Image 1 (cartoon, rainbow, N blue to C red):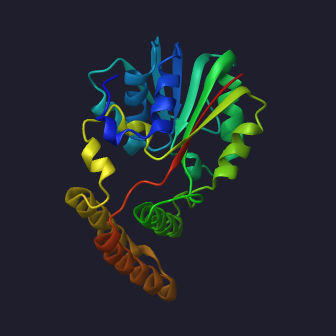
Image 2 (cartoon, rainbow, N blue to C red):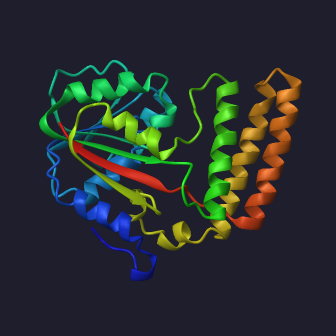
Length: 263
């Protein structure tokens, strides 16, 4: 895997990447795969692998992932993570990235992932957290995510606030996995195989700020579907305040945990 310049490497993220590079993935299942970003990260990061399957409950996301990875030998399926349609101990590796906060029944999802994982197989979680030592730009990113989550929830889309570190650890710890390793990363593990390191590392990057503000404006347009006028007025004001905050502080993804355990 290609490495970013030395001055842009977060040591803990690099340590997580080196750990991934020691894992033979075998059959890999990526839950809540979205557009398939984490599959592509693991393809570049793992020591080797046999195959990848990504599942997502959203037909739109499934089509997006299929289009994005049409040149890759990857199977993308529309499936509810609470009811995985695979035999017991079918996969050598199971993973979920930046999606715990989207789960309605998280304990059920984690139990299903555990069920389809082979004995001795790897269970990998990557997830942002909201507490701890965050920069001003990261705090802006967290506030933006919390605001976005409330708008989605108003529209009936499952979306919770960014979890705290202990909440993430508890969800994995309850499975009874062995040899759990925890990496507390300033950068997303997805950044290392990416060519846009400078954009990720600079919270005042013009393009990144522009995209964040555009996303807020898009979400503001969705508030027309919120019937309760007082809530809508509050969220509109918070959205405008967020745009101004981004212009002042920039924005960065929150710190994240990478957790790797074995069944």
